[in-house]
Amino acid sequence: MNRTWAEHPRVRRVVDRTRQSLVWRIVLEVTEIRLYDRALTIAGQAFIALVPLLIVLATLLSSSDALAISDFLIDRFSLSGASADAVVSLFGRPPSASGGLTVVSVITVLVSVSSFARSIQRTYEAAWRLPAQGLHRTLNGLEGALLLILALAALGYLASLADKLPGGGVVAMIAQTCVAVPGWWLGTRLLLSHRVAWHLLLPGAVISALAQVLVSSAGAVYVPHLIERNTERYGVIGVAIALISWLVILALLIVVSAVVGAQLGAALAHRESPDSQETESP
Image (tube, helix red, strand yellow):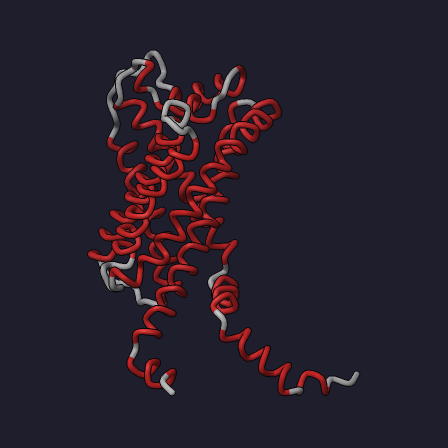
């Protein structure tokens, strides 16, 4: 087959420009970082950390309806009937619970959260091509991962207030973005152990925050149907299946955000470098 067209100067010019483009670099980096494998690992560890953490919180909090974890989830996703009962069964505090926590339960939660944080941190280090560090790195990773979790919880809480705010969903999305941007900005800084300048992290933080707000808004519609469908089929375990499915989507968001943020930061750093300025000058 004649492939001389591939050697045409214009074709080669287009190919070279495509390979040098930001989108192409992101696609290559996503492939190299093994997007789906990393997302599955993060989602699995998030689930292992999330369920024990919510159960422990439900034990620590008051048994009143206003503070119950299960009630918050039911209200957040507007659940009712069998799906609401399944959430109460999974996360609700048993009536006979004494309120005490065992050492094993606390250790389980700490180990699970630590593993989850390390997975996210390794993903960001791989995206930014930074080497791993010691104990100080691990502590920063925990802080960064917990900050992202808090940002996600804050977004969920703000979304639940959408009907009560003037302007409804639009105002809620603006408020979510205002919370998400600094959350991702500081969270990324901690995950990378302060090894990347603040201004290089800002573009990725903005993109990640906007993506999270959009995904969270979609989740408010998608997750209730997912929980109801799985609850009808599998009962209480259906709630767990729905949660792990949604966590996979959020994990994909985290991995893609890490890659996009790293590539945007690298492009910004390249523009600021003296060598780049000399090359671009006439």
